[in-house]
Length: 326
Image (tube, rainbow, N blue to C red; front, side, top):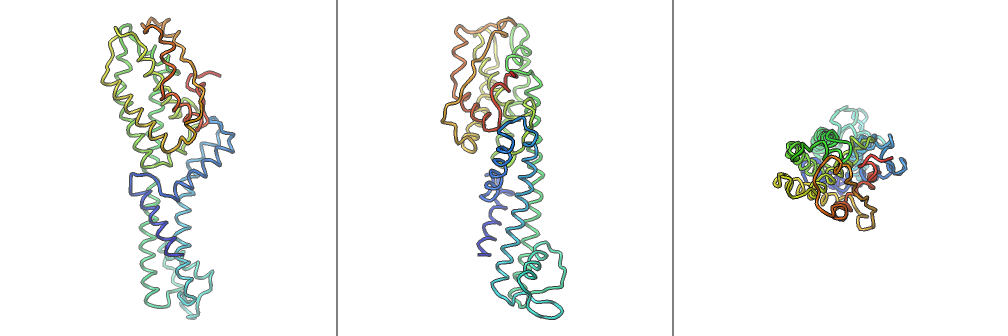
């Protein structure tokens, strides 16, 4: 049992920290369980201050779970032989608690020395365990750095989008210069690059899903939903208005890749009906932006909106947070 637990834990740490394919079974189980606990405790409300602590707790509990599993696995291996560990002074066999203590300071490489392995075989195992403990625990701790960097990137993405306007309509009106939307497309390449990096970070570090900002204007999920609405509104603009179709297409493609990743990882309930808001284009007409005939109906059916509605709900938000309606 000790060998099996060690292999499972080592595999989980290696997959989580040294690959870009997401977390291992232990990591994903702990992160999902902690997030669900916090989400339920917060009443499924995105504005709840409590949710801001979910990410830190996930990282801490994942790290502690790895250490505990390594510790218990070595203890189980040593406990399989009652005489595997002896008191270094009296040479008497250690009891279970003393063996547990010995397993702990071996993994931590403290080398206290008041207990020792009783034979060459157990000495070799002790040395191997100390080396593995040092390597795996160091990898686990350094894993925190890229995770926090990924969290910082998603915060930058949300702030960049929200700084362009409080609502999708406001973003479009602010970008309109009387003849085109060059102000928006000037930022499109940066937004696309950050969105692609954010998607890749989700693949590599799924725990960033648990890092939540309780202010809608600073949270990445309402920001991505707002970006989608802006792209839909741009598709409803009259054809005589020149647009950068390449940047628009690349931004839509990046958004589609992000949503497909979200569907496969998080949106278990995406097939159930989600109420979609009707996009109000009256402010665009008032700003003198030419629109296609019948634009009010054509903007309200895309599949991306249904997916985003489920994603907003899964994070405690709603479409009224995207459109800043009370």
